[in-house]
Length: 202
Image 1 (tube, rainbow, N blue to C red):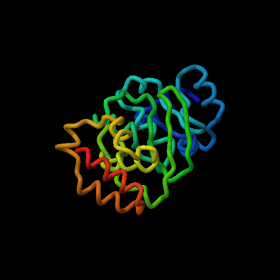
Image 2: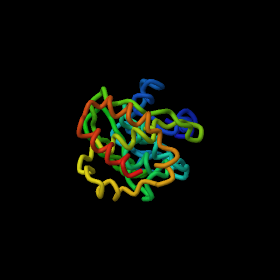
Image 3: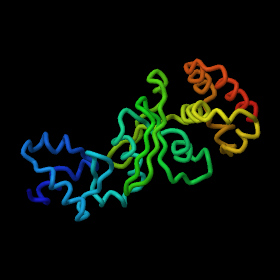
Image 4: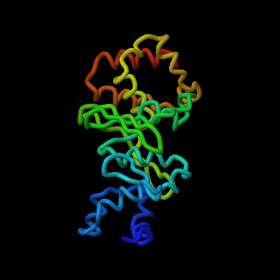
């Protein structure tokens, strides 16, 4: 198999799976993927998933990788909050939420963490443009709720203050109606209490 031909077929996808390769060529030799990985022509993202090293230079491509290698999932929690500028910290790990079991992966694009939530709580995300692709990411309100739900130790005024949410966002941009509507959908009274503490600080 000629790598140039292979690259021409799959490069524009950004990421690709071995299943896509076999659908393209049923007789494809899987040893090619192993060899090309060792040669640095492609990068292994997790078992059966790959990308081209040129995409390491593309800003925020790791978010697209996060969506791609573990489905269904969407970027949320600290990564989404940092993406929107709601928390000041630069987040080195890509954090996401999924209805699948909790999982972690490491590859050349970074560290990826997926927290499990019940399928009925997988809502409140949207598709945002990401260069030539798109990204599934929680709305700011859902990212906040996912954080307070999955990390219940944020249950006092001081703990929530320690999150250092951007004051301008909290005062002028937070959609309180959406936040409360989403919070009710969780059906969790303790979460609603934590939301109450958060809003009392505005």
